[in-house]
Length: 125
Image (tube, rainbow, N blue to C red):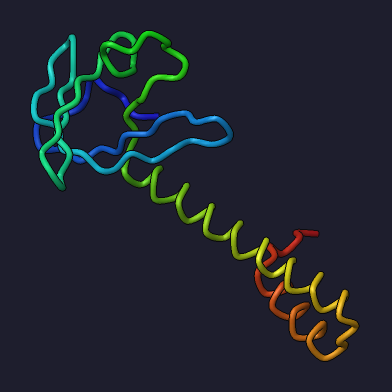
């Protein structure tokens, strides 16, 4: 969890928004101004400014605190993106196994199972 009070001008942070089923990434920003009350960040790509409250730990002007955008570290956002990509690869491998089983193609099923086993996490004993 990112501590808003320790942010300095020039730090890079990520903005996330809790969506309907998962957390939505809204890009990487740079801190422009940081004090005890608010943090102002600027999007690196186009210079769009957003204000975040240090006390409420969410975007200023948001009516619903629990569904408002918030700041996080860039590493947290990259880890979430990596995890989503791995989950998508597992889903794709499962669908290939299911398709090979429907087609009753044994060689394709063996190949799909090998791909699926390489994508699954090892179970610790």
